[in-house]
Structure formats: structure tokens, C-alpha cells
Image (cartoon, rainbow, N blue to C red):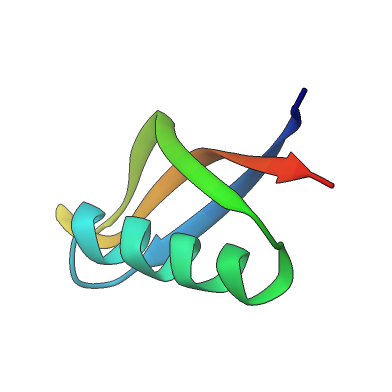
Length: 66
């Protein structure tokens, strides 16, 4: 029997949502063992002077406990 846990993180990028997701997953896997999946719970952008300056994602990371 496996037991999984979900951890929520927020990641950001000045390039794109995809880059924010990739950096969030990379950071999570450097700390958490047994990462199985990640899903995007929310997305938002920061806007300054009418331009997008930062992309943010809220990720839910699932990992298996041993």
C-alpha cells in the first residue's frame, strides 16, 4: 500500500507560464523524494504599465511517502 501527500507551491517566471511550471517542478524535485505528478491549480500574471512582467503558477505536487 502506498501513501501519497500533496504539497502546494507557488512558482514564478518572467518568461512564461511553462517556464514557471518547469522551475517549480525542478525545485520541488530537488527537495521532495518520490514526486509523481504536479498539476496547475491556478495561474496569474503581474502587470505593470499595461505589460505582463511576471507569470505565476500555484502547483500541487504529489509525492509518495515511504
